[in-house]
Picture 1 (cartoon, chains in turn brown, blue):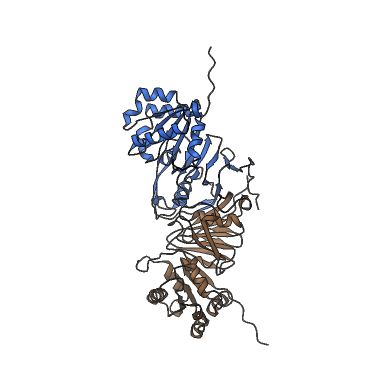
Picture 2 (spheres, each protein chain N blue to C red):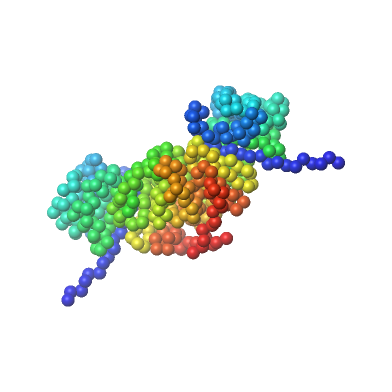
Length: 283
Length: 283
């Protein structure tokens, strides 16, 4: 009887958007190439979230090659049947990393989720150590509940936020990107006032979380990551209509710069010196 | 020996800005007139924060009269010596309320603070039951540390936020206005990462807190009030420069809609049914 190969869970790099490929101080995208194996990396770039997917894929292909990736392949999933393309599937089976570009997260789930390509990425992330990166829309789509829009002038009301099911690479969690830059506190608060078991993660531009699914994450880049622990002491969510303002109390927020981390099991932040921060003492 | 008159502490109405005087569903400004005594109200309108103070004073005079205020007087403090005007001082001594308009909070403190008018407002607030209202700049100025600006694209870094001493009507506190509408989470987080004893209060547009200084406040209006209890478990503030991202952990946030309140003594939120919400149980 053949011994079964042990499962290796991969890693995610969830990027808050906007890293400028021309800037010298680029930190996050070089980190992705390194995570994928550097010169041994084989990266699939998937531009499906974008309305100009081929152009996006070309841009990132050039960039990842410049950053030293061994091989970069464009996914070319422009319509849903493209996700069942045999060559793409073969390439995905031998890839070390997959990267989802920015654009519209609904385009990504609509075009890719459930195709053979989509299922292969998910399977290899959970079982074969695949690295999956995404920026902006490609980042937002990784959570189980996906933020797809919010009213700019809105506040903490369900009517001001639009959600859809995401790819679910990071479970029990909602991700928002461009966080401080676009002032997105209220839409994240709205989500978990509805379901406090959900963790909210707001990621600044030029900033990312490197995630070991089910274990924890660390922060990379020049901005901050905002973690919202939604285990509130009170919420009026069951009693109010969509356009009424929600009440939520005792939301816990952590602001984490580069080098800081978060333990997803114990739900506690970790300093840049590796020290787990104890809970607030009662009283 | 004459018996000393007992002190009566006044009330504040701190408004997040933007209430449209033409809308039928105006809630906050009618509430201010009622707090000042309705048809027995004598209100001083101070437009000093504005670059067009006379125009602002006329607008609010007309509005407060329309809302039933007995008497409305414009302050006309356009330059600092105007704050020592005898007629204004006499009117302030018999006023039931003072209202500071929007504009620039630095103009307000620079023109009014420390003048005889400014000192009379402060004295009568703390001793003679004066009601003091303010919107936008006129609201921001009421805290002890006053937010005067923040970089739109910034994150939680001192370099992204500008502060100045405020009028100090609400002590140990920083107020920010237009809160959800302008996405101002990060600038409030920055302030108390520096000094966790400070309470941060972010007020939405068309929304206000009615404050009993030293005791507590309740929410009035159509948006939310965000209370940030900054007693964090960890902060890197002492160790980082102005342009580095701050780390802060276990900030507690309460989102409070109309009818909800906050006990400033016990630092606990109160539901719209008057129930004080107990602290999170440890564990």
